[in-house]
Picture 1 (spheres, helix red, strand yellow):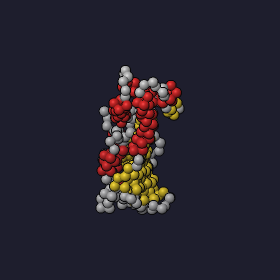
Picture 2 (spheres, rainbow, N blue to C red):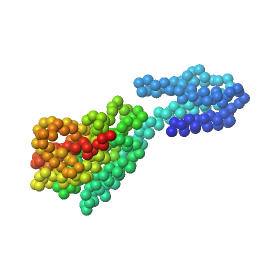
Picture 3 (cartoon, helix red, strand yellow):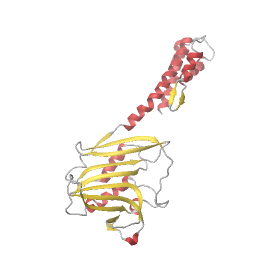
Picture 4 (cartoon, rainbow, N blue to C red):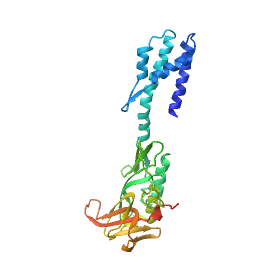
Length: 300
């Protein structure tokens, strides 16, 4: 859309040059348009763009016999458009990738439990290009009272055109806000799988937060003497086939231990570690949880 506007502006300025400085000459308007296109022509090698068209103008067409001033202006207009085309992509990336901040005071209100569904809705509504997001990893810390002390996660969106986007969301507890960063990059050839197409794939942030919200953080507190917890999730479907000790399955009806007869299991894995307090490094409790596939994936 932006480049279409530039082409319209180019045409309008050529029309102005034609009327302001043009003299009698056959097909002058088309010639001015040609000079402008020549001035904007670029030669790209190894991601470097060179104004080859303007160099050709300086070498071969700098001193035309007729309408010299008008044709020079048209060529310089082309050079201006060439330079503009170099500036636009970095500016677009800066605007796209600049960090955004969302108020988190309501989520952190002491009288209310942390609502993960509401949190995700606010993130999703802030951006218009979050399509089929897939969770890459998540790190969270919370107290035995269910107060979230830190939250960080990142996710990727399914490719749009020839680019993909990576988002990272981090809770700034001091400022009571979320900082969201995103960047774009060339897409890689990959396929997103859903249940029914194979066991590969990743859970979406929305699905993950829905499970956590319905289950409640208190369900992951296995030790009454533990005051501080860390939760880590990768977002990818993993297979469990070894010893199921301290391993639990998250289901629609709650959390239940995994028994050896149920193995192997393909589901989204997360680990919860318990500590005596925030400053303590020694793990008091450790448990692995698997989010049951039918909870997080819709079978088509």
